[in-house]
Length: 122
Image 1 (cartoon, one colour):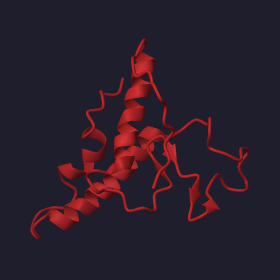
Image 2: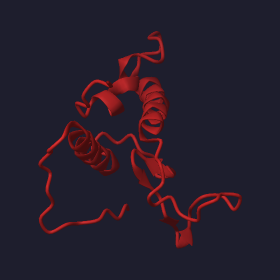
Image 3: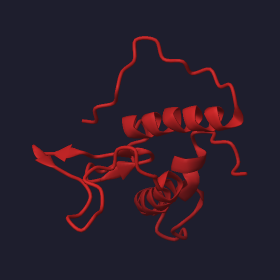
Image 4: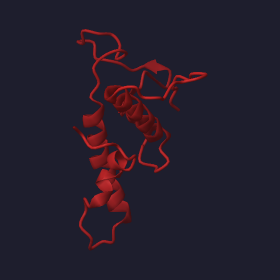
């Protein structure tokens, strides 16, 4: 299970293009964590902009050699992580559903990233 902060009255109105990008990404990542398409396997340490902080009662975080003791407030590799996850889980999905003669790595690999309707990168 993932713990996501809950606000009583969140503002999802976007006042600027940057505000829109941030709020759209938040909603997209939240829907990815909910995993309606059953892509996640449960061992992920990051899904979009969300990082696992605890797993099985143990703290998960940056390595001991890291400058910071927490991911909170750090720059995040959200897009790279989602692209990697889409390739990995898309290939696995293709292998499970493709007939034995079909090539692996077809269009399902992009469904995690593109399926949320993310606006094109600028």
